[in-house]
Image 1 (cartoon, one colour):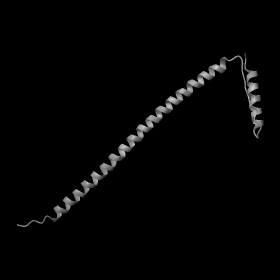
Image 2 (cartoon, one colour):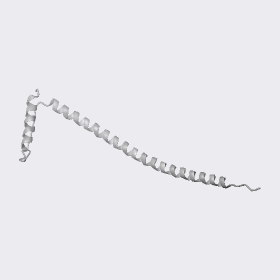
Image 3 (cartoon, rainbow, N blue to C red):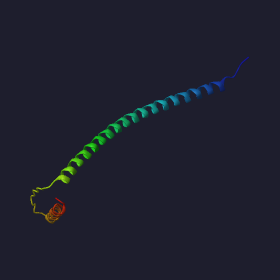
Length: 105
């Protein structure tokens, strides 16, 4: 008795190719997963840095706000720079003087 195993061999070959394809895809997914993990860790570090910078900025703003809120006298030192934006400096200086003069003592 002779049995034709051609179909079986084709099926085995197709399964082997499918297995190799799945293995390759699995390796690619693993590499992508590792890359995503590295990027996630970098983003976490950046997020922590930004949070610390934000907290430092907030503290600094609070200190300067308290300084100017409780300030009863002012000191202003200016150097006049003669160029095309001297009028802008003049406006800023006038606004500062008006702001200080309108602040209750």
